[in-house]
Image (cartoon, rainbow, N blue to C red; front, side):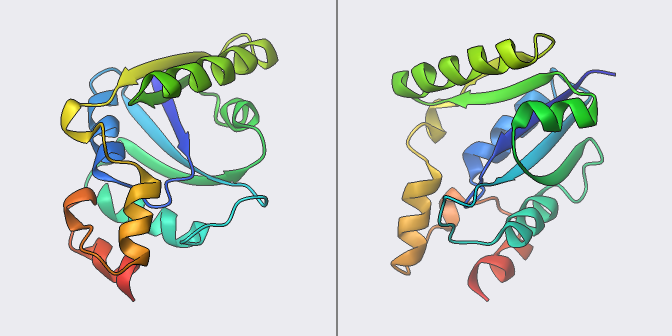
Length: 157
């Protein structure tokens, strides 16, 4: 069984993230969405809420797991015995950043392979920071969020 980890802060989880998971399932039998926590970062949603949102999005798909973690992604991969990382690329600057991280991960854990996936053109402008800004300013971000109606309760309560 081929498994992959899709790590990120997902603050919030967007339609771009959701689409990437669905596309990754064409390559892997199981995808673990790993919601990271970094004490240096300020989040709009706490980690438990981010896990709930992603869990609600994929509630009907047993091939998608959701976990939370802190620390190094390579350590998470080792603990899960998963050695493929999924990373989405929207821009050239995304590639430069992700390439550097991927190379460091490879040095720390030679078994890890980073799989870069281009974000679908219709999602290339969607970023968590832009969606977060819309939400903070009480705009309608629904077109940028997964369609699952349960998500609104997690975002707006």
